[in-house]
Length: 446
Image (tube, rainbow, N blue to C red):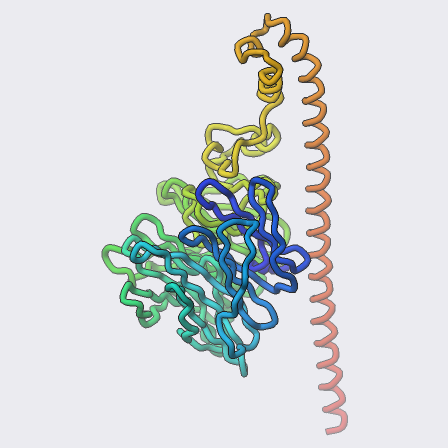
């Protein structure tokens, strides 16, 4: 089951506050880490969000119209206005990016529209008001992701997308300069016979642009990458490198990519599992992943340098990075901050260990931190044994409950994906059978 990224939850790092945006029963909801919540609008098909100068902007799709609105705080009232009056058919939200220009943030939005078997790549720019839409490209099919756009150190916008016309499929790169002009497209890669291109993702890696995409041939899916240097020749893309090939007819690959201490990494999700790779010393190595991470969208976190695609635990406002390391399974079980995780707890303090909670409770009761931490402290000893036991039981019980719910969710998700696969298989088989019967009857009465 392919993921619709425009329905995934989003985390925005707004100065000292984490904003969470999500869709629940097609209602657009915003929350913060202070437990404020605001249900903004219902019957939303898709949405995207980005940081603004002093707040954040929400853009959503409803009834084939795109609406925009700005909030300073989660609890604000907001009026959403349409970006255009004339309707476009079969709209899909694409990439959004904030860019600093003339002391103010401009916002770029790219969307897709399909009409009369032709797709249009539409572009808006917000400069005190929305300007657009302008058509950048037209093809039989266009593919864009939330991570198709990047801003380099010279404030140039780079766009990566896929154009399909008949049997010709091309991965294209364009640049939007500070003069506000789009360049002609450059071909990064193009398909060979019977190969499909999907999932274009772009990274800005310290002077290099790194692109990722997926090629499909039969039941084989390959994750590919290419690099261009910003200093020497941005249009000269390296020969595509195949990072991983997956052989499974049920594998629908969804890519999330980013940087970790200038090392590019890529995580790919199939219908059955997640796997990841990170580039170290010019070699791609496997990343250990735990079961608690989920696909999401993020912006404003210094530890991340992707488009909007990311990974993490959205319920705990926690974002994932590869340096969580080999021991991340143990870290998840401990539910405490490790040295490598400190920078990732942007939403406030991490869950405390029973000992830390005990010390804080005793402090509130007038026991000093030194007394509470001293083994010979009589008050700490008497209070401590009882409270530690209670806290440990409570933490253990909650962890068991979380694991049970996580297992149920994973099983339901897997069951849904399997049922969808079976349905697709039977549907295709039924269509083939009907085609054969029609062919037989046409021959009989010819």
